[in-house]
Length: 470
Image (cartoon, rainbow, N blue to C red; front, side, top):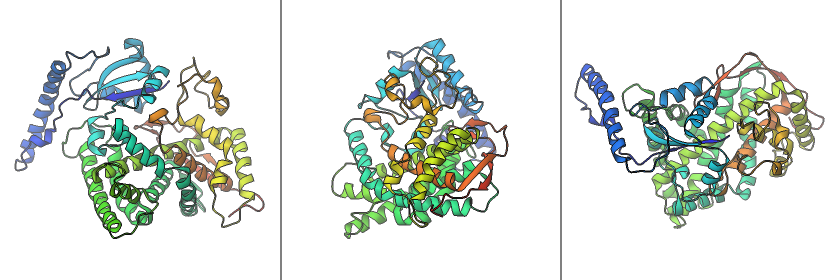
């Protein structure tokens, strides 16, 4: 089962901190913030009831003013009972229901019919929660109509097979460097933080090009702070997660705007028109009137790509190592496939697009993990790790298996994510064997699945197959 949350009945938004003078004392500011925290939710709740009284809204409850179901949803995510949480609402209100999450009204849609409606409707307007909107701005997920067509077309062209063929060597270089520094010679490692660092380095190299090294060092801390604030109540009170995330977002935007100005200057001087990094590519299209995006729009979509290329792939790699530790037969088949590729490479030969295309079984295993299918009516024994269930896609009902979306909402970066994941696993599988340090390791969702201990594993160097690369 897939569940989607649509945010926004286009309500008016208020920032509590916008009403606080900067000259008042700390004690009075705290008192005023508390009063506002009590008053604004009630005001917004009454305003929403009045504003939406004429709308034909689905069943459900908006819950406590402004807070809504935010606390219970976060509790469910962090206790791994989110599926039960969704099922409880579906049993009570049906597959479509209204609620209030993180400062915004939302609609929950679940099931194959929801998949079809979302992925086949190019004019559907998405809006994020108020916290996500403020932190990340206008990106491809929130566009519709001609704007969506323009941005999607630009992203698809940038992430086209031709561009990806060039990217494979860049990804290979980043993965080799990372493995040599952070894995080789280590007896134990924590997988999640290393996977996040690797995917962040890779996506930075794709977005910023040759300047990636200096940019990612500046971005790293602020970026993590911003991502953590995505699921938070959007009230700008000092020292809260949202307030810290907002400050980090502002610093990131300032940095990216500066990079954009520098790149535009280079383009005006006739340099960088054929550059293969996202920033220069989008600015070159803008200079040639190929799209109507502003510099701020390009910055917003760069932030979106950073998040998309960082969070999901790192979690996927982490949980594949988790599951493969428990599935030696599956690991054996992956190893056989990867060793065969390694035997045909020299010590310094980078992986190529053709090599990645040969990793068919490995990707089948990843695809099985990339989406949680818990509807037993569609997938028998859905909680079992069983890559074979996806071998015959024709036997799966339409819009029940959508790991990368579909139609006009198909993820434009699906091939990039596939390439990044497969290159990483090639070097890990061919060079190491591992076992989990803590067999009782568990995880929470915040919002992505996150091992509580970071997934510490013991590493054992593996003898490379004959004639394989070093």
